[in-house]
Image 1 (cartoon, one colour):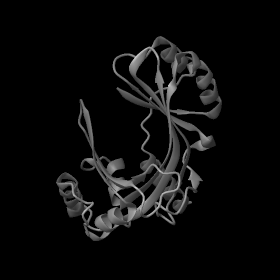
Image 2 (cartoon, helix red, strand yellow):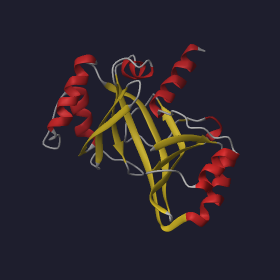
Image 3 (cartoon, helix red, strand yellow):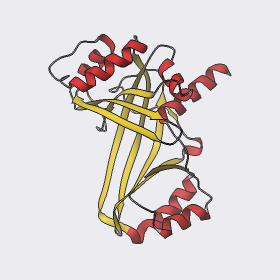
Length: 231
């Protein structure tokens, strides 16, 4: 099970105190993540995803470096989600390469020897049959913390903070800056668990009346851009 919640900073601070007795002290992972999302010039791919036309799809470059470089390691990721009345299936295809090679492959269909995954090629070809012109459209970055709890090795808590987006200077190597994605500089929390949540977590969620929310960062960023252009 995977569920997402949006937290105000005050609630986030209280939750960190609540978590202290339950955390694996030496099992905390920190990372800074930068993404560039590719779309058509008029954002048709994310529009179709929001309107639930076809299967939801995203194409992006992802880097886990604090300051990505053209020669550094990066990932080409294709995410596809299909929703039906009684189920939701999501799959991510991933290839390790570098920003220049990935950009040249997505935008210009130029594949060097690092673009060597046949399934990635097949999926991108299918997407390009619907969205022929894919270009960098959105930069989204954030700081991520992954926590494990002592009582359940299959329970992880993921916090994503300082989420920034921009639809200009859309390059993975251009640095981490932009506008806040969430109101009040809030925190996005994801709970991943096999089975039930522990009672102390459900009690905290109930206390603050926190309910699961759909939160696509790219969709939220696009809606923010569209809203500012309309105003």
